[in-house]
Image 1 (tube, helix red, strand yellow):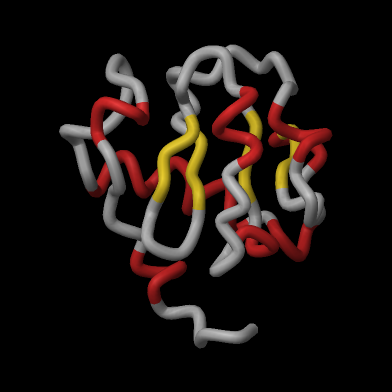
Image 2: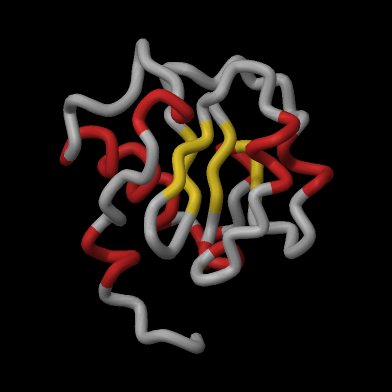
Length: 107
């Protein structure tokens, strides 16, 4: 299990969660942040600081947001040079998952 960032983050990118993550497992895409599940230590530091409550523990993700469990995992499979072990700061921005890139702006 890990934490998952859902659609509330799309086009917001507050990044407060990045600053509190002790293991640097939150990666920035152009439109959304992503948690690398192999690097996440399940500390939960990110969840309470999210201003739009977009971060959930994987088993607590509401059904209507469950696609983001897959999205957060697949983004690192699509970009295999990114992630565990690695650390987000070292990589800089990563490409968004195609499903996130396809979300119309302003929704």
